[in-house]
Structures are given as C-alpha cells and as structure tokens.
Length: 106
Image 1 (cartoon, one colour):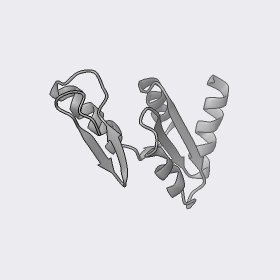
Image 2 (image 1 turned 60 degrees about the vertical axis):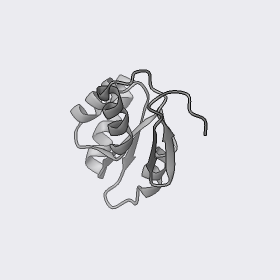
Image 3 (image 1 turned 90 degrees about the vertical axis):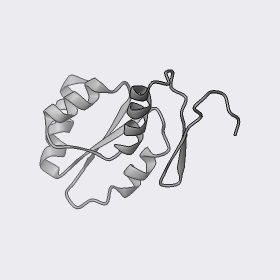
C-alpha cells in the first residue's frame, strides 16, 4: 500500500477495495469516481435507458433477467471491475425488448 499521490484514496464497497487512480484531484473528479462505484446497481427500464447508458459509458455489461430472477451474483460480480459498468433489465418483457434492440443495433 504505497502512497503515490495526495490525496491517496481508497474506496471500500462490500469488501472490495478501489484505488483512486484517476487523473485529476479536483473535487468534481473525486465525486464522479465515488459515484461511479456506488451506482453499481443500475436498472434499465426502457430501450431509451439502455441507449443512454451504453452511450454514456465506454465499457458496459448489460444483464437481461426474467422477473423474480436472483441477479445477486451479477451485481456482486460488478464490484470486481473498476473500469466496467454493469446494468440490468428485470422482467421478460423489457429484457426481450432491450435484447432485440441491442441485437439490431450492435
């Protein structure tokens, strides 16, 4: 655990440690970094949500799950990746709609 810059920051989320390695020490950079790690459980409710989410993030994983499916492992997996954002659609209807849209526009 070496100090390479000031402030040196580590964020602890559900037993996972994220090191602050983003360029920029202004408060806006720090707040964006923290929010990125705290907003790990993003639920897509429409095709427009999916489009916006994928457009706003460089690298994203989208899970499509039926209603009532326990997607806890998916959410837990998201905590292991610092540079990949995860989102999910819950329910057969919206999951199929988003899946079909992504297939046509991939």
